[in-house]
Image 1 (tube, rainbow, N blue to C red):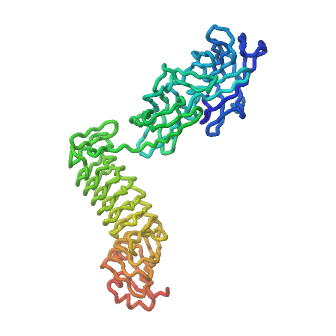
Image 2 (image 1 turned 90 degrees about the horizontal axis):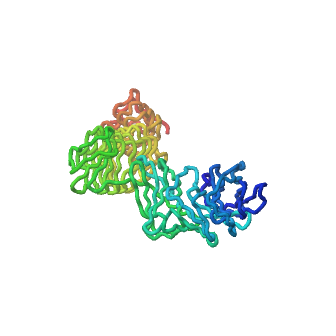
Image 3 (image 1 turned 45 degrees about the vertical axis):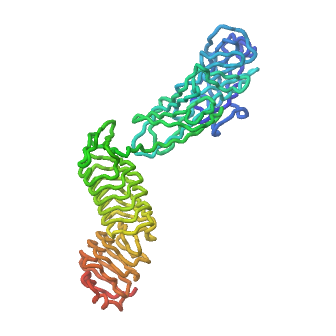
Length: 574
């Protein structure tokens, strides 16, 4: 029943003889009688609360004597597919000896037989995937009746795989194979209709079942795949599951579990990234060619099936300085979990390097390690403690999260990351942060996390503004609680007006460097903040005015460097 949606059910089939034969169907049938099959709400058993619907391709086997295997097909289906008229097609066998009851089997099997209430038929070892439903043409339903009313029973069980992935690479699932070391899973089955209607695989059965014709790309969203199995108790590691992908196979063993007749057993499976051994680096190349590192060539370097594998004679704890510097064809790299340090210039100027996978274990990313790479997305390890000078300068990612483990952020770490729009600083363990960490990230719109200002525009560390999210702003007021403005914090912004609160006591060198449009500075403090160098407001705009409390004009004029940054210092009533 290809339209049976996520359910195994009991089906009531009401059978009526044709006009040419008014005898009950358990008498020898001599004409092509039709009968109506109806899904009866008061008799069906459902799984997941879904409906049963007939399909135009459904076929049934009906037994009215010991060896008369009758084939019935759909003649017509009502508008909602819950009721159907079945028509007689043909029969096999020649024994016209009546039996004490009528029997039916779904799906039709020309080789099915009946003997003393026991039906022998087949549970498919190769089951066909249906993307729209649980395809019970893979299963077996059976019925027994002493009159013209049939009630079909579930004879087997379902295993439902919920499959998703959390890796960027394509994964196209071709088939799912289940193999048991101790249990028969498919093939010839017997069904005792006098007892429990349970399908029992005989000694002629097979220990393997495969769901075929899947050809489905696995995504981050869960997808469902159903396999029909006999109701069986499986011991720990008895059942092995093999997912066959276009790209590779994945195999795992299931713990002990019980499959109950007419029930669904759900198994969630997420495809996670495969990772290199501790003496390997995996990579891809835009040219699908071997990339030979400048340092540490390894004992082998093979490129096949779209992936390069460099194998070394010892485990790796560091990516050495300059190892891949300047390799313009390197497009992705996956590092082993043994790595602790990414050395200086290790991947600098790898202009096609868009994907980097680092595992927990890495503690240090050294200066210039990924500068001028094309990295569009990266997850920093939860073990990372230090990111050094310009480590990710001029990279392409739009968001970045600083993990809670980080204690040190060096100068210009994310300098000129012009695609960067959002930063999350989850670390509350920071001990040292250079003021230029986000220097000239001109499209940065928000800064989130433990050190963010209330308006999410500033990274405020120990009272000092370290970085500013300038995108779209021409005017800004320094938040309350800020006592210092760090080096290059507002450098190269498009601000035309800034208001500095009375709490600010220090403006470090280069704080507003190259902010050439800044023409109005409002400083509320009656005591001039200390200017940390001679370039705090370098590259002054022509006609810039600095507005200060009226009673403090002379103090500002006398303070070091203030007059040098403005055409005029003007008294203002705040």
